Amino acid sequence: MFSDKVVCIAGASHGIGRSLAEAFAREGASLLMLSRSKHVSAPDDCIGRADAIVMQCDVSDYQNVQDAIASALARWGRIDILINAAAILGPTGELWKSDPQEWLSTINTNLVGTYNTIRAALPGMIERQDGKIINFAGGGAAYAYPRFSAYAASKAAVVRLTETVAAECLPHNISINVIAPGAIETRMLRSVREAGGEVRTVGTMDQVVDIVFFLASVRGVSISGRFLHAKDDYRVLTAGMPPDLYTLRRVQP
Figure 1 (cartoon, rainbow, N blue to C red):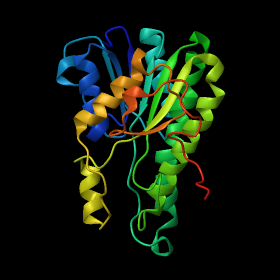
Figure 2: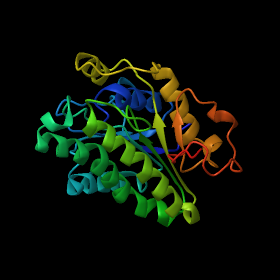
Figure 3: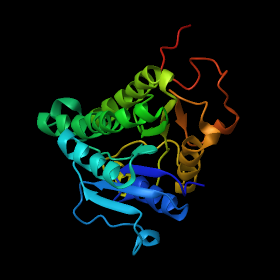
C-alpha cells in the first residue's frame, strides 16, 4: 500500500513509533527513522535493504531535525508522510512541586519537537502540493490530567497546532491530523501507572496502525485538521462533516 511512499517517523526507537516503522516497512515504504536513542535500528524488514535511514536526532533541536530531513531529501527527493510519535512523559506530581527545567524540557520535546519536524518537512510538501502529517496527542489533550501538567499542556498544544497548520495548508493539498491513541501498553504507559496516573481508554497497537494507515492513505485524503481517537468511527468521515466535529473547542450550554 505504501511501496512508493517515503515516510519519516520521529520517535522510532520504541513504543508506537517503532511499531509504525515496522508496519510501514512491511508495506514497502522507504523510511527515515528518527530517535534520541543511540540504539535505534531499522526494522527487520529493512535490514540489508536500501530503503531505510536511521538517525539519532533530538527533535527539540531544529538544526538536528533539518539535517535529518535533508538526508531523506538527498536520498529520495521528498517526504510523503511525516509522523510525530516522539514524546516524553516529563515531571509527575503537583505542578508546584515540579522542576521548572524538566517541565520546560517536556514542552520542548513534545510541542517544539512537533513544530520542528513540521517546519522542516512542509516546504517540500508545499512545493509538491502533496503530503500527509500525522501527530499524536495523549492524556490531558482533551481533559484535565492532574499530576501530569507538562505532558497534558504539551499535548493539548499539539492538537491546536495541528488544527492551525491544517487550516494554513488547505490551499496546498496537505492533510494534517492528530490522533489520541488511547492507553497502549508501552514503556510510557508503565511510567504513567507507576506515577499513579489515571488510565481511561485502553487501546491496542493494531488500532493505532489502522488509523495511521487510514489517514496516510488515499482513503483519508479529505480529512484534515481533526483530533481523532483510535476507537472513533473515522472510516465514515467525509469532507462535508461539521467544521467543529473532532476538534478542540469550548462547549457552550
